[in-house]
Amino acid sequence: MKLVGIAGSTEDHSYNRTLLKFMASHYGEEADIELLDINDVPMFNQSDDQTDSDAVQYLNRKILAADGVIIATPEHNHTLTASLKSVIEWLSFNIHPFNDKPVMIVGASYYDQGSSRAQLMLRQILESPGVNAIVMPGNEFLLANVKDAFDENNNLKDARTVDFLGSTLQKFVKFVKVINTLNEPTTAEEEDLSASGKIDTTVEGVDMNADDWVEQAAAKTHAAEGDDYIKLDRGLLTVNQLNMFLNTMPMELTYADSNNQFIYYNKMLPTEKMLAPRRPGQTGDPMSSVHPGRAVKHVKQVINALRTGKTDLVKMPVPGNTPDRFIMHYYKAMRDADNQYKGINEWVLDLAPIVKYYLEATGQQLVADPNAKVDATSGASAKGAEKPDATASASVEEAKPEETATDATTSASVDEADTPATPAAPVAPAEPEPAAEVDGTSGASES
Image (cartoon, rainbow, N blue to C red; front, side, top):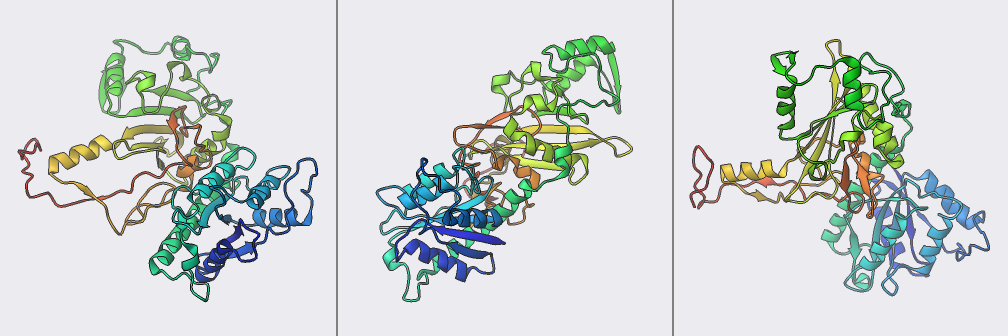
């Protein structure tokens, strides 16, 4: 993997450049890291366009050719340096090499806080419109008291610091692979989200975007309703019974057909109380109508992966999960008896109450696993866990602190934190506490 490193300093002796040189020499098995020089980049001046200068174009070419970028920022007066800010200004003025580029931030400082304020500001700048970098969430590396951190050979002295920096770089390498997989041109671009095609179940002559599409389509097809019976594979239910059955499912269900038309969701709760909010008027809409433009590329990737059989299940946690709320989205390909793709079954579920009940019923508790390594994009533990599918991280690219991301197949809006926030690390059940006596039938503790 090819990475480039940029030190945000033009000083003759820069500890942040020293840090990058150490990373390049010490972690060569993880990635090939090339250091880029910013000393000749002029101060940004919109009235004197220097975009085509050798210094700016040198950085532009190197960043475009790299798989990812590592930026080491010092902290001057609680912020990043003017020279680094100027570099980013040139690279987001008429050219945009950082667009969709994975970036890792590190930093060294003379003081205890280790460039934390500068890193926070740099993250905001890199994620701003016009720059559009994809900064790895969390995993901050803050090297404090830097004058004492290196030995005479410019190697980090503290073994724990070396190990932590190495583990952070390993996570960034994984992060880069996921992001760049999502950015690869795929046949997913051929997915028609406008549902302009026709399948054997398409209801013609009804406007897909009509708020009363269900009522119009039902009248057009003389659909069964009310107390009319429907024969299912292993059951006979009236339409009313089927509605009651589906609307009391302990999860939110959505059906998008093979023509990419959103044709059903179980109306178990009012829109504002749903985990993935949907409105009645959206039923019948083409998929293009229930997603913002920035999400379309990833929606296509998810659908195409299911349609083509690249995977039959895509799963992703919602960004911003907490220990008391862990919402998962699952997308399952539906196929007929001849294995022909017929659409997507999506279900949305909060796992936290299930885990809580299990712990109460068994008298166990969650404890941190000291050996667990949490994946940078999904929060999945690397120990004994399935690696996240490339499409399952679809929301990584779009996340902005002030925005909301839309669920990959429906219009479900979810609150997002910083590109998406990594959920708390999964932890293993501990042995029951001796004081907890569990009732054999109800799981209720007697203590």
